[in-house]
Image (cartoon, rainbow, N blue to C red):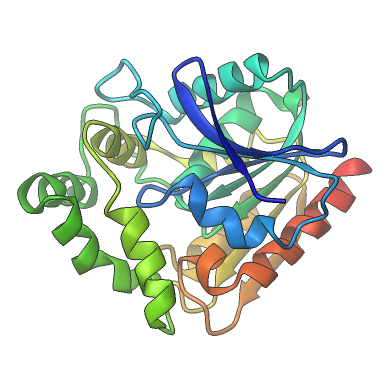
Length: 266
């Protein structure tokens, strides 16, 4: 069963209906909801699975603040869940999505059953308004090059094996980013601090990362795992880079299946 595209309250998302547990997928800064498709295909058919398009991505409206914090994205997620009638869910955040999942779980513990942090971006931990050099470079490059050239230059770094079909998938998603949504996400990345949020997260959480991830290296995944109050499993996927859902969808799906089994008993 494929995921269907929907809109609610100015946000676009993809959903696969199911009467079972609810799983919400949060994509990264250069990605999209469609990137989770090969993972969702490998999940039990009774799960209700939702993948949002982050604020300012695809058909989702940008946030109002020029410099939003992770908490603002968490507020947007809470609003979407409210509109969809979802009281509690498991969250899986990939890369930048991990910052959103962390902020949400830290501020709304009663709404999270369990977490999966995939290729987690830890954030740069800078004060709001103090843009990190990495975030500044991202914004400037997109503005100067345009999305197509921006994606062509950067997509190969997301993969380890560099298979042509996989490269086209990640390049296509990255080429779809636009302003102001991408710039808002880069500013949030600059001020985000997932390790600080981890200390406030009461829900059990797992971490998965590609062993060859050059964007969010395994050392960051290990640091996050060590900071969690209720750590579950830490998985490093061999011969895999940053784009886990594209390069290793079965490993990603296996982590989610384990996540949901444990989440039901949390």
